[in-house]
Amino acid sequence: MAEVHSSGILLESGTNEIEIMEFTIDNNLYGINVAKVREIIMSAPVKAMPHANTAVEGIFKPRDTVITVVDLPRYLGVEQEKSTKDLFIVTNFNKMFIAFRVHTVVGISRISWTDIHKPDKTVSGGSEGVATGIAQCKGDLVTILDFERIVAEIAPETTIQMNEIDKMGPRSRSEEPIWIAEDSILLSKMIEDCLHKAGYANLRMFSNGRELWEALNALPTDENLFDDVALVITDIEMPQMDGHRLTKLIKDHTRYKAIPLIIFSSLISEEMRIKGRQLGADEQMSKPEIGHLVDVMDHLLAANRSK
Image 1 (cartoon, rainbow, N blue to C red):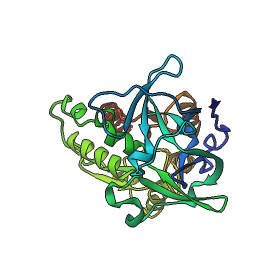
Image 2: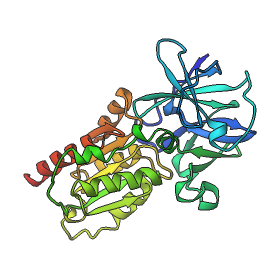
Image 3: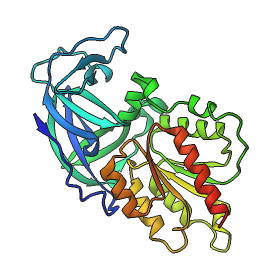
Image 4: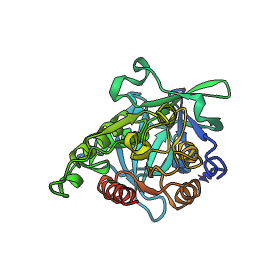
């Protein structure tokens, strides 16, 4: 059994770097952000659960916590007998612990987000694909999987829910321009649909922080900035430029620092919250709390209007 700890250096200063844990399934290299990983353990007997998704093996209890096990090879279409040599990568994101069965763990590489590229549709499987990026680690090409999308497919009730917006009742329409950086195609669409339902009609979506940052710098300097962007919402994990780097750039900039900025990420923990606060984020919250996101947006925009 081995606990996994990131160095803690990479995201603190918004350096746009990431640590990738490489693992194999059927001799193919895949990767996961170390920030999502809590520990690696030898595979163990699993109790099957009735009516579960076919990729869900069941549950096990390594210590005092019951953890769901996902058969990642089966999810990816690899039909292979389970082995006692398999490993469980125990993850923690979206406030959940989930173990993913893999065949081997290769190691950890530190790279820049600029070295992670969005896969084309032939690799990712189209708009519903689970490859969120392709990275080069120590000379090898590694497929970075969209674990949030995998969990959302296996257990839809654990991801962003439109009914949180429905419970808010009738809301007035807002044309204030909201810019959102989110690389997951599935989650980007969910967020967009929920915010439209909440009355926010003027949304501009970006697939990573770099695209949003370049769009900011392309705005005319002789116009009121808030007429173009009243609030920024950003994920943390994104190819090319992550949300912490984007936050640092915006909050260190003389003109842009007044734009309210929310970090909306599955990785929000107390440690990440401290890092985000140090970088100047106005608010931070964990997915899938879409209702809370709307409440915070309402508050920040109202406060900005009153200045």
